[in-house]
Image (cartoon, rainbow, N blue to C red):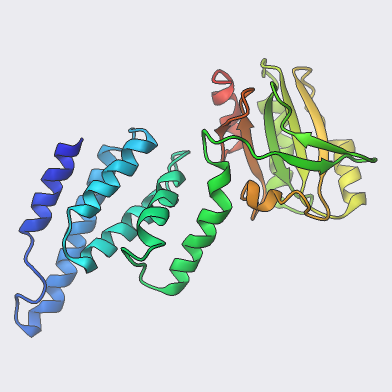
Amino acid sequence: MKRLVAILAVILAALPAFGQTNESTAHADDLWMYEKLDSLADRYMSLICIEPVEIKQQECDFLLASIDDSLMQSHLAQRLYNNYRKSPLMGDEAVAIYLWDNWFESRIVNFESEDEYADAKVFARFNRQSLIGCPAPSLTLCRPCSGTTVIPRPGRSAILFFYDTDCAKCKLETKVLPTVLKGWKAKADFYAVYVGTDKEKWKKWRKEFKLGNCNLKVIHLWDPELESDFVQNYGVLSTPKLFIIKNDGTILGRRLEVENLPQLESSL
């Protein structure tokens, strides 16, 4: 894979340097160079899309280090960052956070604006603790009547479903979950974590929500005072949020859609 990066670096080195044209054509040439760079980078990222996260991180380092021009380097870094942050592939956000930690935070490369820098900082802060393969953050949450429960329980696989009773997508997923999980065979805890503060709405939701699968133990919890810091620990800036946790306590799946759940059951 390093050979492919080296080929790309050679192509980039062959591009005409900034300022080597007259003033009337310089802007057009600069635009062409960036478009060429974007095209090459997109093609390269598609070639390594099935590689493990660690390989993608190494390739980003090697590719960025191969570019001498600081403006092009920053442009490429942001292209890589946006690709992995918005990637549909589960787990790719870890590459975006890696780029923030190793390139952007220290200003080796720069975003186009301070707003983008601040946004990337927030993204890293609210996602780094719940990446795939990380130990699932422990939360102490309140039970419906009284007392607290610490989740996830050691030695138990778990599904975490963060929802709000006023969230339209949460309502849809609540209706779909019993059907999708009807054939679930692995023993696991299903934690339905209400992120709101309306106790009556929560009570009504609990009465209506039934999975109907004896292999999944449904446990209703909430944290109206936000004392567990679940927002940062699991990046719950919006709802719904679904996670799967293995019985060894590590995160198997994040940023999931309901229909993804059965696909990961065999990996528990």
